[in-house]
Image (tube, rainbow, N blue to C red; front, side, top):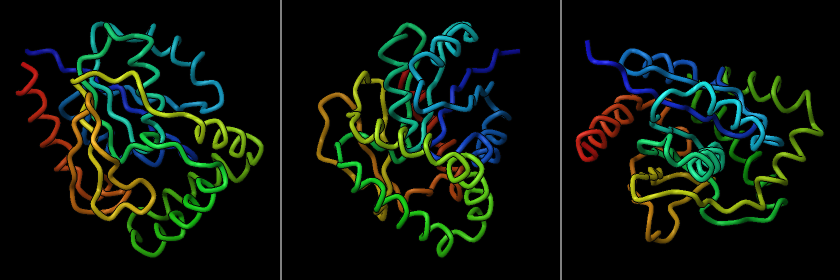
Length: 207
C-alpha cells in the first residue's frame, strides 16, 4: 500500500483546529494530517517542537494568518517541505494594527450573516480562543500586523477569493504563484472539493 503524504495544517489567527475540523477530517481520508494549535505569540519556539514530530517531507496548508506560520516553518526547515498551499493568506502586504482590528471585526460580523452553516463553530472557537484571553489576542494580532510573508519557494501556491474583503488579491509575486477562486475569506469551508482538486493538481505538477 502506498504511504500517505503528510499535510501540516496551520489554522488562522483567533481560532484553533476546532474551526477546521471538518476540513482536516476530509483531508485525513487521503492524507496523514497534523493540525497543531498555534500560539501566535510564540510560534517560533513551537515550530521546533512540531518539526521533531515530522518524518520526511510535508505538504503545508495554511489559512489566513496561519500563512505567517507556514512561511516561518518553510524558512526554518526547507528540507522538510514538499510544497505549500496558502488559502486566503494574510501577510503579503503589511497593515497597521488598527486597520487589522477594524477589518477583522467587520469580517467576523459578515461570517454570522453570510455563513450560517459555519458561523456557530467559528464564533464559539473565537470566543474560547480569543475573547476569553484578550491580552493574548491583542498582543498576537499586533505581532502579526508587523509581519510580511516570506520564506516561500516556487513550490508555493496562494489561492485568494474574488470577494475577500479581509485579504484581497495582492499584486504579483515573483516567487509565489497566485490563483483566484469564487467566494470570500472562508471559501474553503464551503468548497472543500476545490481544495482537494488543487492538491491533486499540484501533486501531479510536482511529480
